Image (cartoon, rainbow, N blue to C red; front, top):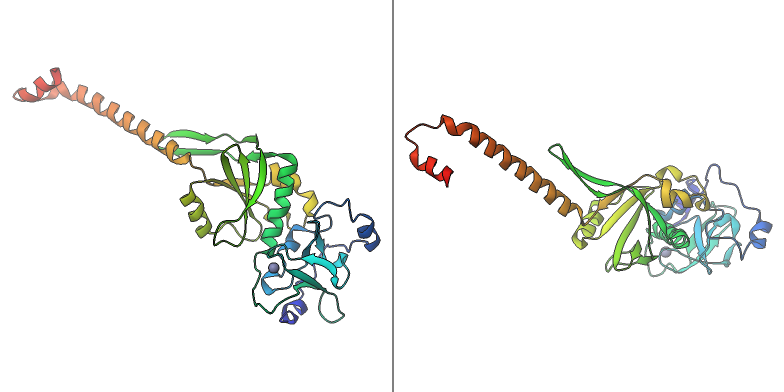
Amino acid sequence: MGHGKHAAGGCVTSPGYENPDPARAVRNKTDVPAGDAVLLGQLFACTEQGGALVAEATDGRLLHIDGVPSGLACNCICPGCGRQMVAKKGSVQAHHFAHYAQQDGRTCVSAGETALHKFAKRVLNDRLEIALPAMIVKGQGDQEVVVQAERRTFDRAILEKKEGQIVPDVVLLLRDRRLIVEFKVTHACGEKKIARIREMDVGAIEIDLSNYRDHRLNDIGDQILYDAPRGWLHNPREREAREKLQDRARERAEERQKQVGRLQRPLSPPNALPEERQWRL
Ligand SMILES: [Zn+2]
């Protein structure tokens, strides 16, 4: 199975995590929103080695390994690839979820990120509002506001999978406009991905959730929507703003040039007649 090494390595132990009361878990089975007992950081624990602390129930809720029955009875799938998961809750290894069918050899490094994206999509769709960070481009003592920092409403949030890409983006739609929302938890958005976003010329922001890893998912809705630090990865209107700055800088330079010209005129040598004539045209 290949899980023994990391499972024994303590990645499953999660300081501060309280085992959910099993009775409560059953009682709330239908009305608990996704992520009730799952900490943000637990989505990303161990997934690179193949064992996971969190899996997805058939209704889309995210469940912690402590809150499910052992074996296939957990009735869970991997949030990354959708394959069936088995809950390994023996007495030797630390408890974890593993993919049930390992024979195809596929690894699944994006389960945590995809789980977060699915969760964020729900939160965004519930509220249909997000705080956008400001984007102001500056240069030569001048500036142009591309976006004011303010709350914006949108029509809906979707998960959009790009071809050749494993992890789907959370995309906000406002009429025909799209805004990609990235999340930073373990590492910032990679250069490759940013290059792809620039190439597509689609607006994209990154929300930094790295300070909320030990918070329950259900407690970070407002952080996702409004409070967590955020910045622009790309804005299609940035180019236009930079061009405006350049235009204004050029105009100022030309104006300075004219003033210099006016000052220099009386100082021109008397034999510079052709140039003098030009000036008077
Ligand atoms: Zn998977």
